Length: 251
Image (tube, rainbow, N blue to C red; front, side, top):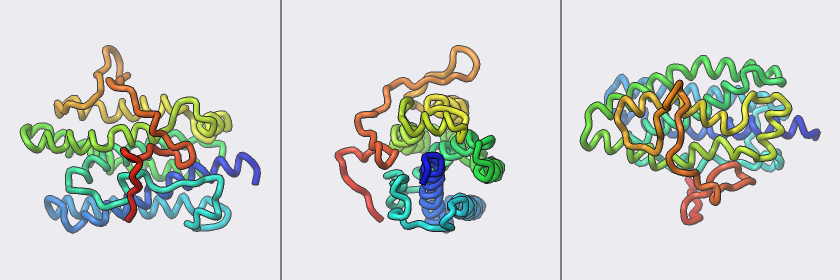
């Protein structure tokens, strides 16, 4: 297998595994949402994520295959917080607002990929994900405006996965990230991807007056992190942050 093919499989499998896992978490809450309308929306988002995962797997020349032994160059598992059911409804909103958006940022960066089939799938995904973005944005603003326990609850839920999601976009000088960028498979390095994510979520966080480690921009829309990310827990092999304490979460 040539290097270009290995890189393509790396990013495709990483996205597909996490989209499939997020779809499962959405599906688990479809019947337990705060209202029938929210339940219907979450169920629709679950179907979207399953469909996106399938579209991505079909880009792989071996077909829709989930056996990780078939892809030794792309060792990956879902990011830790998705390996077990979410704790509550606020965790679902946090996953939608933060991690669903992070995956969309990656797809956005692949819209003009040098691998045309990936570019076509990425554009389709980005188009469908706009509903997901609006859902999370609306809920975060609403919960923040309620103040009290609800505002604190969504703050805690977002803080619970904050480092994990922001690190999931990768360290700036990671060799795989550099090769993906140099090969024009995606159009940005990790720090730019993070900046794009913060620019997307920052306005809602600010409007909701949530206390998260994020500085509003002095000019334009360049939001900045207050605290350094915990790169000492970064797992190069799995392209994700190891859980605190080294514990391994399983289904």
